[in-house]
Length: 636
Image (tube, rainbow, N blue to C red; front, side, top):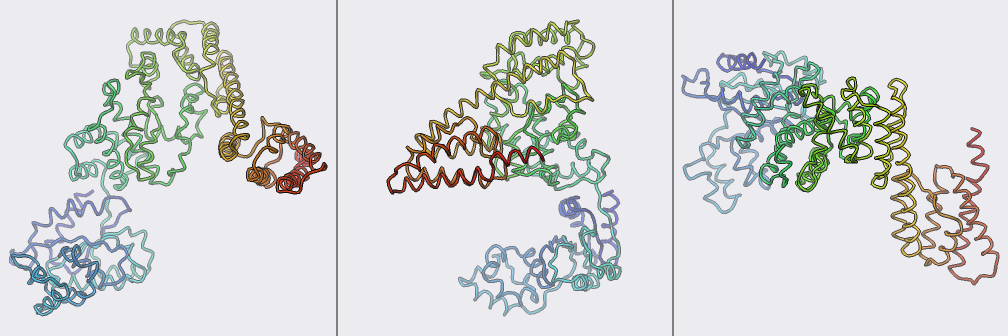
């Protein structure tokens, strides 16, 4: 496609014309990069027409982004020609030069020693000298002027004004103008009316992936080693960027993905993994990180994910459930779609916070975090990958059928051996069971016997298990993908252990919170909030009693008493959530004790006033969310 465009543009330079050319294409398609890095290299050797083969075109790329007028364009052209103005003076004194810049041939003021202002200490004196020596109007001749971002100019700058300026250039002095735009974003009817008078050809810009990729790698400022890596693995980019038969590659997304991964590649190659086990699989790691990086870059550019919205990309258990229950069981998962589009292999997926935050938050690569993630994802223990996980990973590879028969049989026997030795996490045992019995049970095992043995193993390991809040949800039965009764039995055991772990963790947390309530209410309040919002999404007094709250309240400082009253008000009275029955019991018990205390003889002080305020809040909570409220909710 670009060969056709190249031929038309080169012919335009070598033919006498009085019109411009419009190069149109979608944002991110690589129009600007092609003009700047490919076409300009060809154009600089083209001799201008009517110059007697003595002059060549002067290529300039000018962005119209935010341009408000023709004078604005002239300023930008001038600063492109003489960047010394921009670097040394434009920010504080360009206004002094506006009339000179737009009317003078400053080229006559450039000497062997440099710009004339070097002779003056004061910029204003230099301006007067330039004005004195400027004897003729600045001439736009033999320019190849590429005006980019046509659709992004300021609304004040009308299209007829712009094209009028373009027309004045192309009709005189061998000037050539190429307008670059996403024409679909130009909604002005006026443009459609008058473009035929100024624009001779409209070229639609498209590049095939291979050409885009090769052009970028060629011009990319990086090490030879990284360029070689990109060339050797261009098929990964090709497969992802041209999926679903799309013909036009988004150049900006490709550039961003390579740039981000370049940071990762360079920091690893220069600072290393600091792990011999990881060094042995460096190439595999690089490919996995590359696919993850490309996927996040594309999804972020599409607006599907953000720094705070990771969807379910961190929930690796979805992959395990998909392996056991079948991919269709997790078809609504964003993660599984992400894997299908970018990773291609369930067993190769890992979430990397270190990379995700670079892409979505503009952070620098945290090499320590990345190393930690790699050690965890590849099960590195004391610098080595345990043998059981080497076996586990090989068997669960998507191309495991390529493994020779005897080798694969040995791997299955080893998998069984390590599983019975308790070498895996409890949640990994359903996957192990699935691997042993898929493909017609190659080891001729008894599913009943193996399942019972696995259950004994995981019960012995129950103390190692940490509660997983989503386990029950993902293991919920799907009638479309029924499990065998042995798989169901194994999963039921795991879910029971998971619930026991939840209770154990809860009891431990409540014990800690009660201790803080008595000793450090501020710390209690912070941890109380964090814990309950993380686990339930709202306030909860589960695990407390009315008697404990009452006796502890009496011993708090007045400041902490007030904070506790406010916590009840905003956490329960002002909440959209209904009270649970056990919470109602707690509030009723607490209120009885407070009522009795208030009814007795109490000194007139702040402590008594705070006790009455607690009584008022409890009254309101029970009136609004008491037994009647719960009954109404049940009836509804």
